[in-house]
Length: 375
Image 1 (cartoon, rainbow, N blue to C red):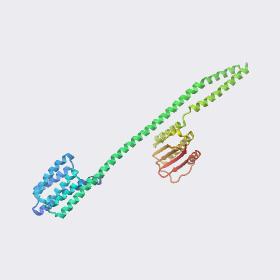
Image 2: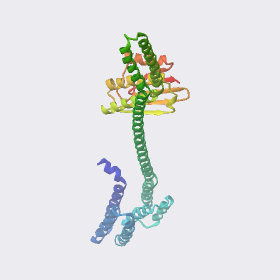
Image 3: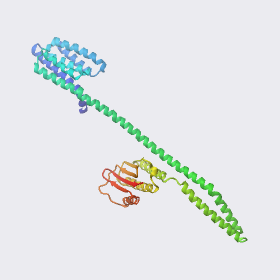
Image 4: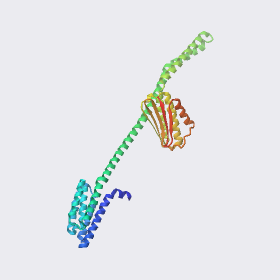
C-alpha cells in the first residue's frame, strides 16, 4: 500500500482536488438555488473524463481535454461560478500536459478578475497553491525521476560491462591454463623424444659392449677391461648429455607456478568457494626464486582460508611494478580478532624475509596476505 501511494501520489492528489472542488461547487450552488440533476450529471462527466485521462495514451488525452472543456463550460453555464475552481484546475492540467514553460503557470492569476464566490484572497491562495503543486512536480519531482531513470540505465550498463569483463577474464584464465597445460605436455613429449634420440643408441651400444666384455673376460681380460672402460666413459658422457638436456628443456618456472595456481583455483571452485587469479604487468621479470616464494605462500594462504575463514570467495592478485612485485591473497571470510603466528604464518614470514621482501596481514574485513618482493 505504501509503495502504491508513493508511486501514484501525484495522480491521487489531483483526483482529490477534483473531488473537493466538485463538493465545494455543490455546497456553494446548494446555498443559492439547489443542485439540479443536470449539474450532477455534468460533474460526473467531468470526474470521469479527468480520471480516464490518466488511463489513455498521450495522443488521446487532447480529445478528453476538449470534452472536459465542453463539460466545464456547461457547468459554468448551469451552475454559475460555483464551479470556477474546476475550470481553473482543468487549465492547470492542460498546462502540465503540454509541458508548458514555468512562467505560463503565473498567467492563471487572471482568473482572479473573474466574478467568483470565494473572494479574491481565497482565489489567490488557491491558485498559488496549485502553481506550487504543479511546478514542484513538473520541474522538481519529474527532474529527479528522470535523473533516477538515467542513473538506473547507467548502472545497468555498468553491470553488463562488469559481467562481460568478468566473463572475458574467466575465459582468458581458462585459455591460459589450457595453453600452459598443453605447453607442458608438448615439452614433456619433446623431452622424451630428445632423450630417446640422443641416448637410446648410446645405451644400447653400451649394453652390447658389456655383453661382449663378459664373454671375453677370461680369455682376453685386457681387452675386456678396455671395453668396460669405454662403456664407463660413454655412460658418463651420456649423463652429461642428460643434465644438459634437462637444463635446456625444463619448463619455465613461471609456467609451472601459474599452472599450479590455476589448478589451486579450480580445486577451490570445485569445493564451492569461488577463487580467481588476476595478473598485471610483465611476469617474465619474476625470478624462479621469487616464484617459489609466491607459490608456497599462496598455497599456504589459500589452505588457511579454506580451513578457517568460512569464505565464499578468494582473490589472488599478482602485480609486477618497476622494481617490485606485489602478491595479495584475500578472502571475504570472518577474519580473526588476533593473529597467532603458527607454523604457516611463520613460514610465510621467513620465506618473504629471506627474499628481501615484506609481508603484512589484514584480519578485519576477511583475511588478506600482502607480499611485497623486490625483483
